[in-house]
Length: 302
Image (tube, rainbow, N blue to C red; front, side, top):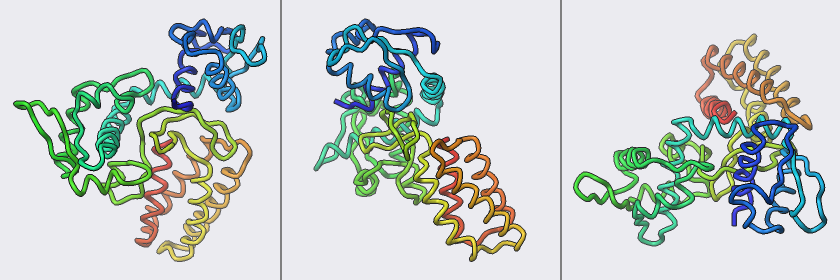
């Protein structure tokens, strides 16, 4: 069982049943295909969604999901719509295919050989309720082969299995599989396969992560870590004093915002973009490149 993934799917089912309304009440145990899950499990998932601020529960019978109705919160509506938009983004689907293939092949220890029909029916080939297409999977296989991460077995021109190369194993033998990050020489931190509802830094978030529990959507703790790194880095940046002062002010403001009980993503994005622009304009020292890459990553996840 994967509580995070199931919670996201349940949230989507509630959203669809309620037609995105925060006023419509939904009986959880009467949702199509969810009634057979069992009262205890439905109660666990619903309570989790309530805990992270996505649902309000009503008519709760202690210990049972029977008779329980729920209602979406405004936060639940916004985040579900964000999930649905991201589910259909080509780059998200491409990263899902790349990371999923490497993750699945890594799990085939010690030979690391993965048959593609097996992958196609696995949870790693899904984004919420959407299954990756054959074209998306074959395109990802071709990319992994071009980057010498896998060798490919074919039946005619169609790939039927992949095996990780030594380089591919290095990519897969990490806590968080991030193919594009690995190829760019970055720390693993990318868009991953299974969607989840979780809490980061005390602020309700909803996003996606693979079995290593990554999250899609910015994590305030990552922002605070970046603030600490930038604070140490600013004095050595090869920028004018005016730009240095501006970056310092923005970094301090970023730290204050990320440390709020409920950080404002739009405000964090504006500060990150401002810092990034100042660093580029000032031709910051090479040591600032890592920080710039971290900023770019955070902006991609917001």
